Image (cartoon, rainbow, N blue to C red):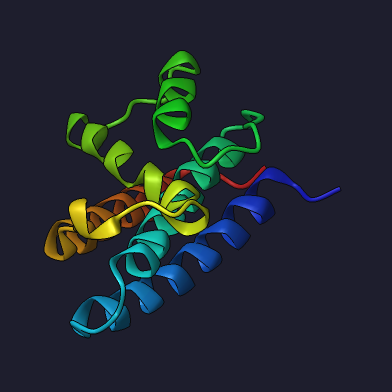
Length: 134
């Protein structure tokens, strides 16, 4: 069985990979918003799940960022108020990837998405550094 810290560290490595992809895609105006947004959503999702794993909270198999934020609050994990808007990325996980939705009508704010991922990842990494190993 994978220990909580090991799972959290693995999720953070995966989040970093999504951030690298996001940064490359966001810089290319020809990259589709749904693909670019997917990597932003995935990076945030993995960071939130890493914090949940680190604190021993079982999380559901979900891409719903609001649900993960709610679970964190229910578990008494303080979440910065400025993270409330990350839920805007949820649709990029499934709806825009698998449904024939007009993505052009809901364009990704790339600078915001990049900033969002950087802030959430920085917060999660700081928690991993301050949390003692079990």
